[in-house]
Length: 318
Image (cartoon, rainbow, N blue to C red; front, side, top):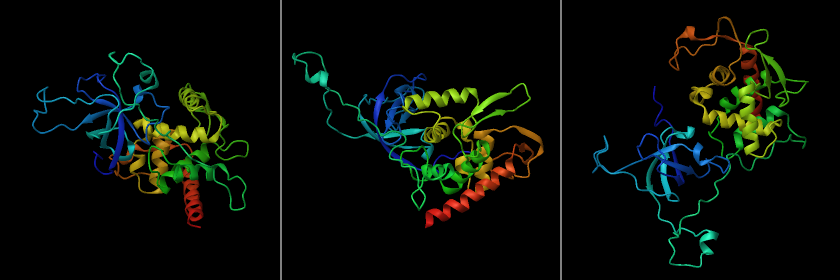
Protein backbone atom coordinates (compact mmCIF):
# COMPACT_ATOMS: atom_id res chain seq x y z
CA UNK A 1 0.00 0.00 0.00
CA UNK A 2 1.37 3.42 -0.91
CA UNK A 3 1.01 6.28 1.54
CA UNK A 4 2.51 8.91 -0.77
CA UNK A 5 0.41 12.05 -0.75
CA UNK A 6 -1.44 11.26 2.47
CA UNK A 7 0.72 13.74 4.40
CA UNK A 8 2.28 16.72 2.60
CA UNK A 9 5.31 18.72 3.74
CA UNK A 10 6.99 21.58 1.89
CA UNK A 11 10.64 22.46 2.40
CA UNK A 12 13.37 24.98 1.67
CA UNK A 13 16.88 23.66 1.47
CA UNK A 14 20.32 24.02 0.00
CA UNK A 15 22.14 21.68 -2.38
CA UNK A 16 24.95 19.90 -0.53
CA UNK A 17 26.46 17.93 -3.41
CA UNK A 18 25.81 16.84 -6.97
CA UNK A 19 27.24 14.20 -9.30
CA UNK A 20 27.30 11.43 -6.69
CA UNK A 21 24.16 9.51 -7.66
CA UNK A 22 25.21 5.83 -7.99
CA UNK A 23 22.25 5.16 -10.31
CA UNK A 24 23.24 7.89 -12.75
CA UNK A 25 19.87 9.64 -12.50
CA UNK A 26 21.42 12.97 -11.45
CA UNK A 27 19.67 12.90 -8.10
CA UNK A 28 20.93 15.56 -5.73
CA UNK A 29 21.86 15.63 -2.06
CA UNK A 30 19.80 18.35 -0.35
CA UNK A 31 20.11 19.67 3.19
CA UNK A 32 16.64 20.75 4.31
CA UNK A 33 16.21 23.65 6.71
CA UNK A 34 14.92 22.50 10.10
CA UNK A 35 15.29 18.81 9.25
CA UNK A 36 18.97 18.07 8.63
CA UNK A 37 21.13 19.48 11.38
CA UNK A 38 24.89 20.03 11.27
CA UNK A 39 25.36 16.65 12.94
CA UNK A 40 24.21 14.90 9.74
CA UNK A 41 26.96 14.46 7.15
CA UNK A 42 26.42 15.05 3.44
CA UNK A 43 26.81 11.31 2.85
CA UNK A 44 23.80 10.61 5.08
CA UNK A 45 21.47 13.07 3.36
CA UNK A 46 18.68 11.60 1.21
CA UNK A 47 18.88 11.85 -2.58
CA UNK A 48 16.33 14.26 -4.03
CA UNK A 49 14.77 13.96 -7.47
CA UNK A 50 14.13 17.08 -9.54
CA UNK A 51 10.95 17.95 -11.40
CA UNK A 52 11.87 18.60 -15.06
CA UNK A 53 9.81 20.26 -17.82
CA UNK A 54 7.48 18.11 -19.93
CA UNK A 55 9.41 19.14 -23.06
CA UNK A 56 11.92 16.40 -22.23
CA UNK A 57 11.59 12.72 -23.00
CA UNK A 58 11.43 11.68 -19.35
CA UNK A 59 12.82 8.17 -19.91
CA UNK A 60 15.91 6.23 -20.95
CA UNK A 61 18.23 9.23 -20.92
CA UNK A 62 16.16 11.24 -23.40
CA UNK A 63 15.72 14.90 -22.53
CA UNK A 64 17.26 17.27 -20.00
CA UNK A 65 19.24 16.71 -16.83
CA UNK A 66 19.21 18.88 -13.68
CA UNK A 67 21.84 21.60 -13.69
CA UNK A 68 21.66 22.72 -10.07
CA UNK A 69 24.99 23.41 -8.39
CA UNK A 70 26.12 22.90 -4.79
CA UNK A 71 25.06 25.92 -2.74
CA UNK A 72 21.85 26.55 -4.68
CA UNK A 73 18.77 27.35 -2.61
CA UNK A 74 15.88 25.10 -3.61
CA UNK A 75 12.19 24.63 -2.91
CA UNK A 76 10.22 21.38 -2.93
CA UNK A 77 8.25 18.86 -0.94
CA UNK A 78 8.62 15.47 0.71
CA UNK A 79 6.64 12.81 -1.16
CA UNK A 80 6.46 10.78 2.06
CA UNK A 81 5.35 13.71 4.21
CA UNK A 82 6.77 13.95 7.72
CA UNK A 83 8.95 10.87 7.27
CA UNK A 84 11.23 13.17 5.24
CA UNK A 85 13.01 10.47 3.23
CA UNK A 86 11.77 11.18 -0.33
CA UNK A 87 12.47 14.84 -1.24
CA UNK A 88 11.30 16.24 -4.59
CA UNK A 89 12.82 19.52 -5.81
CA UNK A 90 10.47 21.77 -7.80
CA UNK A 91 12.85 24.64 -8.49
CA UNK A 92 15.56 26.93 -7.22
CA UNK A 93 15.27 30.31 -5.52
CA UNK A 94 17.50 33.23 -6.64
CA UNK A 95 19.84 34.41 -3.92
CA UNK A 96 23.14 36.24 -3.58
CA UNK A 97 26.11 34.01 -2.89
CA UNK A 98 28.52 35.07 -0.16
CA UNK A 99 32.27 34.71 -0.45
CA UNK A 100 34.16 32.65 2.06
CA UNK A 101 36.90 34.08 4.26
CA UNK A 102 39.51 32.38 2.07
CA UNK A 103 38.06 33.96 -1.05
CA UNK A 104 38.03 37.41 0.59
CA UNK A 105 41.75 37.03 1.27
CA UNK A 106 42.67 36.21 -2.36
CA UNK A 107 44.83 39.05 -3.70
CA UNK A 108 44.90 37.97 -7.33
CA UNK A 109 41.46 38.91 -8.64
CA UNK A 110 42.34 37.33 -11.98
CA UNK A 111 42.67 33.91 -10.40
CA UNK A 112 40.25 31.12 -11.15
CA UNK A 113 38.58 31.41 -7.73
CA UNK A 114 34.80 31.43 -7.97
CA UNK A 115 32.53 33.10 -5.45
CA UNK A 116 30.10 30.44 -4.23
CA UNK A 117 27.27 30.32 -1.73
CA UNK A 118 28.00 29.48 1.88
CA UNK A 119 25.73 26.79 3.23
CA UNK A 120 23.82 28.28 6.17
CA UNK A 121 24.12 26.32 9.38
CA UNK A 122 20.98 24.20 9.60
CA UNK A 123 19.13 23.82 12.86
CA UNK A 124 19.96 20.72 14.81
CA UNK A 125 17.37 17.95 14.83
CA UNK A 126 16.46 18.78 18.41
CA UNK A 127 16.54 22.38 19.63
CA UNK A 128 15.17 24.45 22.43
CA UNK A 129 13.84 21.69 24.67
CA UNK A 130 13.51 22.34 28.41
CA UNK A 131 12.47 19.31 30.50
CA UNK A 132 9.02 19.53 32.02
CA UNK A 133 8.45 20.39 35.65
CA UNK A 134 5.54 19.73 37.95
CA UNK A 135 3.10 22.54 38.84
CA UNK A 136 4.95 22.95 42.16
CA UNK A 137 8.31 23.34 40.45
CA UNK A 138 9.95 19.96 41.03
CA UNK A 139 11.57 18.06 38.20
CA UNK A 140 9.05 15.88 36.38
CA UNK A 141 9.43 12.11 36.30
CA UNK A 142 10.91 10.46 33.22
CA UNK A 143 7.62 9.54 31.48
CA UNK A 144 6.52 13.18 31.86
CA UNK A 145 9.81 14.41 30.39
CA UNK A 146 9.41 11.98 27.49
CA UNK A 147 5.86 13.15 26.80
CA UNK A 148 6.95 16.80 26.87
CA UNK A 149 9.92 16.02 24.62
CA UNK A 150 7.93 14.31 21.86
CA UNK A 151 4.97 16.69 22.15
CA UNK A 152 6.76 20.06 22.14
CA UNK A 153 10.31 19.82 20.76
CA UNK A 154 10.84 21.57 17.41
CA UNK A 155 12.89 19.85 14.73
CA UNK A 156 11.93 16.23 15.39
CA UNK A 157 11.53 13.89 12.44
CA UNK A 158 7.77 13.67 12.83
CA UNK A 159 4.83 15.45 14.41
CA UNK A 160 4.09 12.94 17.15
CA UNK A 161 0.42 12.75 18.07
CA UNK A 162 -0.71 11.93 21.63
CA UNK A 163 -1.49 8.30 20.84
CA UNK A 164 1.99 7.84 19.30
CA UNK A 165 3.67 9.22 22.41
CA UNK A 166 1.49 7.15 24.72
CA UNK A 167 2.33 3.99 22.77
CA UNK A 168 6.05 4.70 23.09
CA UNK A 169 5.87 5.51 26.80
CA UNK A 170 3.79 2.39 27.48
CA UNK A 171 6.54 0.26 25.96
CA UNK A 172 9.49 2.15 27.43
CA UNK A 173 7.98 2.08 30.91
CA UNK A 174 7.76 -1.72 30.86
CA UNK A 175 11.18 -2.13 29.22
CA UNK A 176 13.16 0.03 31.63
CA UNK A 177 11.61 0.13 35.10
CA UNK A 178 14.92 -0.25 36.95
CA UNK A 179 15.95 0.34 40.58
CA UNK A 180 12.58 1.92 41.32
CA UNK A 181 12.78 4.45 38.46
CA UNK A 182 10.50 4.31 35.43
CA UNK A 183 12.19 4.77 32.06
CA UNK A 184 15.59 4.63 33.72
CA UNK A 185 18.30 5.47 31.14
CA UNK A 186 20.74 3.31 33.11
CA UNK A 187 18.49 0.25 33.02
CA UNK A 188 20.22 -3.04 32.30
CA UNK A 189 18.80 -6.49 31.78
CA UNK A 190 19.10 -9.77 29.97
CA UNK A 191 17.21 -9.92 26.69
CA UNK A 192 16.11 -13.38 25.55
CA UNK A 193 17.64 -14.86 28.69
CA UNK A 194 18.48 -18.55 28.52
CA UNK A 195 18.69 -18.71 24.73
CA UNK A 196 21.56 -18.73 22.29
CA UNK A 197 20.71 -15.11 21.52
CA UNK A 198 21.19 -14.01 25.14
CA UNK A 199 22.73 -10.55 25.46
CA UNK A 200 22.95 -7.55 27.76
CA UNK A 201 20.31 -4.89 27.07
CA UNK A 202 20.70 -1.22 28.03
CA UNK A 203 18.75 2.03 28.29
CA UNK A 204 15.12 3.08 28.19
CA UNK A 205 14.46 0.91 25.12
CA UNK A 206 16.73 -1.93 26.27
CA UNK A 207 18.82 -1.77 23.13
CA UNK A 208 20.98 -4.77 22.26
CA UNK A 209 24.75 -4.54 21.57
CA UNK A 210 24.55 -3.34 17.95
CA UNK A 211 22.03 -0.62 18.70
CA UNK A 212 23.88 0.34 21.87
CA UNK A 213 26.87 1.16 19.69
CA UNK A 214 24.67 3.21 17.36
CA UNK A 215 23.35 5.06 20.41
CA UNK A 216 26.89 5.82 21.57
CA UNK A 217 27.93 6.99 18.09
CA UNK A 218 24.85 9.19 17.80
CA UNK A 219 25.40 10.72 21.25
CA UNK A 220 29.06 11.42 20.42
CA UNK A 221 28.05 13.27 17.24
CA UNK A 222 25.56 15.29 19.27
CA UNK A 223 28.17 15.84 22.02
CA UNK A 224 25.78 14.19 24.47
CA UNK A 225 26.13 11.56 27.19
CA UNK A 226 24.49 8.37 25.95
CA UNK A 227 23.70 7.35 29.54
CA UNK A 228 21.24 10.23 30.02
CA UNK A 229 17.52 10.38 29.26
CA UNK A 230 17.37 13.19 26.68
CA UNK A 231 20.06 11.75 24.36
CA UNK A 232 18.23 8.43 24.43
CA UNK A 233 14.92 10.12 23.55
CA UNK A 234 16.67 11.91 20.68
CA UNK A 235 18.10 8.59 19.51
CA UNK A 236 14.62 7.04 19.36
CA UNK A 237 13.49 9.89 17.09
CA UNK A 238 16.64 9.38 14.99
CA UNK A 239 16.08 5.63 14.59
CA UNK A 240 12.40 6.11 13.69
CA UNK A 241 13.36 8.60 10.97
CA UNK A 242 16.31 6.65 9.57
CA UNK A 243 15.29 3.00 9.68
CA UNK A 244 11.94 2.06 8.15
CA UNK A 245 12.10 -1.46 9.59
CA UNK A 246 12.05 0.07 13.10
CA UNK A 247 8.97 2.21 12.52
CA UNK A 248 6.89 -0.05 10.24
CA UNK A 249 3.36 1.41 10.07
CA UNK A 250 3.76 3.09 13.49
CA UNK A 251 3.16 6.61 12.17
CA UNK A 252 -0.01 5.53 10.37
CA UNK A 253 -1.71 4.25 13.51
CA UNK A 254 -4.77 6.05 14.84
CA UNK A 255 -5.32 4.64 18.34
CA UNK A 256 -3.30 4.06 21.49
CA UNK A 257 -3.66 0.29 21.09
CA UNK A 258 -2.40 0.32 17.50
CA UNK A 259 0.52 2.61 18.34
CA UNK A 260 1.51 0.49 21.34
CA UNK A 261 1.44 -2.75 19.37
CA UNK A 262 3.28 -1.35 16.34
CA UNK A 263 6.01 0.28 18.43
CA UNK A 264 6.40 -2.99 20.33
CA UNK A 265 6.61 -5.19 17.23
CA UNK A 266 8.75 -3.01 14.99
CA UNK A 267 10.88 -0.92 17.36
CA UNK A 268 11.18 -2.84 20.62
CA UNK A 269 10.82 -6.37 19.20
CA UNK A 270 10.60 -8.12 22.61
CA UNK A 271 10.83 -11.86 23.01
CA UNK A 272 8.13 -13.98 21.39
CA UNK A 273 5.87 -16.13 23.55
CA UNK A 274 3.82 -19.15 22.52
CA UNK A 275 0.30 -18.61 21.24
CA UNK A 276 -1.50 -15.90 19.30
CA UNK A 277 -1.94 -12.38 20.58
CA UNK A 278 -5.42 -11.13 21.36
CA UNK A 279 -4.34 -7.75 20.00
CA UNK A 280 -4.68 -7.89 16.22
CA UNK A 281 -5.10 -5.19 13.60
CA UNK A 282 -7.62 -7.35 11.73
CA UNK A 283 -5.82 -6.63 8.47
CA UNK A 284 -5.67 -2.85 8.92
CA UNK A 285 -2.04 -2.74 7.83
CA UNK A 286 -2.09 -5.67 5.45
CA UNK A 287 -1.07 -8.42 7.87
CA UNK A 288 -3.26 -11.52 8.39
CA UNK A 289 -4.59 -12.15 11.88
CA UNK A 290 -2.29 -15.14 12.48
CA UNK A 291 0.74 -12.93 11.88
CA UNK A 292 0.60 -11.74 15.49
CA UNK A 293 2.27 -13.96 18.05
CA UNK A 294 2.26 -12.98 21.70
CA UNK A 295 5.18 -10.78 22.74
CA UNK A 296 6.59 -10.30 26.20
CA UNK A 297 4.32 -8.23 28.53
CA UNK A 298 2.16 -6.84 25.73
CA UNK A 299 -0.92 -6.42 27.93
CA UNK A 300 1.12 -4.55 30.55
CA UNK A 301 2.50 -2.30 27.79
CA UNK A 302 -0.99 -1.40 26.63
CA UNK A 303 -2.16 -0.72 30.19
CA UNK A 304 0.82 1.59 30.78
CA UNK A 305 0.19 3.34 27.43
CA UNK A 306 -3.46 4.01 28.23
CA UNK A 307 -2.51 5.34 31.67
CA UNK A 308 0.05 7.68 30.10
CA UNK A 309 -2.46 8.86 27.50
CA UNK A 310 -5.14 9.62 30.10
CA UNK A 311 -2.70 11.30 32.48
CA UNK A 312 -0.82 13.52 30.06
CA UNK A 313 -3.61 14.54 27.71
CA UNK A 314 -5.49 15.75 30.77
CA UNK A 315 -2.41 17.47 32.18
CA UNK A 316 -1.74 19.33 28.94
CA UNK A 317 -5.35 20.57 28.83
CA UNK A 318 -4.95 22.24 32.21
